[in-house]
Image (cartoon, rainbow, N blue to C red; front, side, top):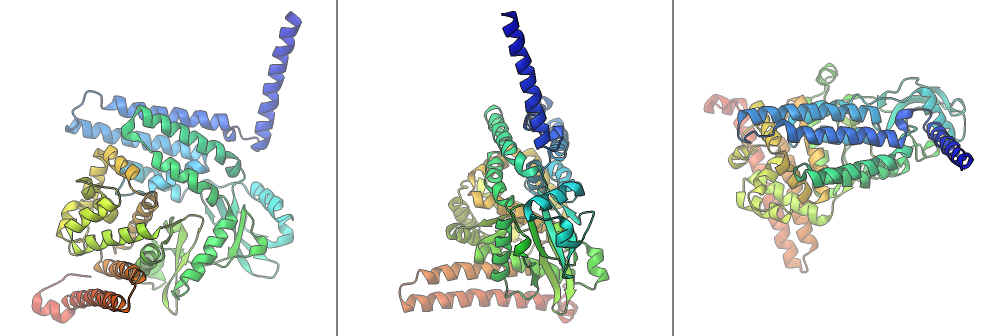
Amino acid sequence: KTMLRRTVQAGAVAGTIGVTYLALQNNQWHVSNIGVVRFGRAAITVSRIAFDYKLSTLGMAKDSEEYAQARSAAHLRSARRLLRLCCVNGGAFIKVGQHVGALDYLLPDEYVRTLSVLHSEAPASPLSSIQQVLREDLKAEPEEIFASFSERPIGAASLAQVHRATLHSGETVAVKVQHPSVLGNSVVDMATMELLVNIVAKLFPEFSLMWLAEETKRNLPLELNFVNEAHNQERVRRMFSHFDWLVVPGIHWGLTTKRVLTMDFCEGGHVNDKKYLTDNGISATEVSDRLGQLYSEMIFVQGYVHCDPHPGNLLVRNSPKGASLVLLDHGLYTELTDQFRLQYANLWLALIRTDLEALRHWSSRLGISGDLHKILSCIVSGRSWNSITQGIDRKKATRAEGHDIREFASQHLSLITQILNMVPRQMLFIFKTNDLLRGIETSLGTRGAARSFITMARCCVRAVYTDQLRHCSSWWCRVVVTMQACIAQSAISVYQTCRWLRTTALACFFLGNTEVV
């Protein structure tokens, strides 16, 4: 028996050593890449955050100043813990952190401000690891394919990094290479997130983040397949070819696999870099207008939306046509159903027209009823309810208003979480897209300009009346709908002309009006 016990113990030790050896070997000898280690690290972080919220405000009145200060401090501590977790675990965790960091005006400012650094400070993989991925996927030594390959990446993100390279033909290309451990860790990471989010939702219902776990689980496999991204890129290039100021890099299919994406190299500065715009004679207003035009058509007309428009994925450069936009990173798109697209277009028309009854109606159609429709309207527009009732095209956004919105989000996180769990899943990425675009407009100093609402209104009208025409069964119906569409577009043109007249030097002289569109 003693001999048998010793044999079993020795076998267990040997098995443990063997499993550990294989795990380390499969994860390039990085202990932090082992699933159990990553799971344990995430579980400890989430547990500390959940109990911190419970204990830090214990016994305090929710309407007291003491409660508000304690809550804000808990937000900041929790955000810093999440940032550390994202940076250490990397991969899918950084992706989720970037998503949270993009939800400005939607989540407490402590989270947005802390996690937004992940958009520009994602860790890079060493060149040796990148070269190994190239060997495995392209079936050749990098030197056989590229005449030159930059040692340092020109951009690093959560799932991949991009290097500048030159083909032997002399053509300059951008090569996007997936981080070696991301794919292997993704299954464990998503299972970890799903389990922890479920546990937190049961213990602390007010902190339910099921919407985030579900969307990440659904979209991460698509983002990890660069062939899928290449198809998205070509589809968008065709879809918006009528915008002669939009550049979408071409794909080099012979050098593209699930983990390697090779495309044309495009020069340009970040879209929110005002110094670059000034130095190159590029109009910030024109950049903002074209960005609004592109995304309005994506959302309201085509229903095919690029969901990661942070400044690193949008470049701008001067051209004979004025400001040209370069759209990068096509891994994540959301395809809107016609029903949702039209409901959302009608919601925005109600916001622009200050039609409060229509706002209630279309919010209800999107799953939000009662007074919660006011909060949904604020989330969609990024404006306070007071501004909405006065007209968001007439009352310019201010820093004070932005502060008030963030303060509300900080104090009513559970209410906002409830709304996020109620709205259609498609709307979650629209929220993220909206907030990223607002951040760019704020950087450019064009936030809340009436031009953006005019562009959006035209696309909304086009979407609504095109759908009505599609359902017409007689020529008379088509005539009536066409006339209604023309009247609606003409009303927008009249409004635009009136605003222009109010801002001309002559009008300012006679009327004393100094408003700027």
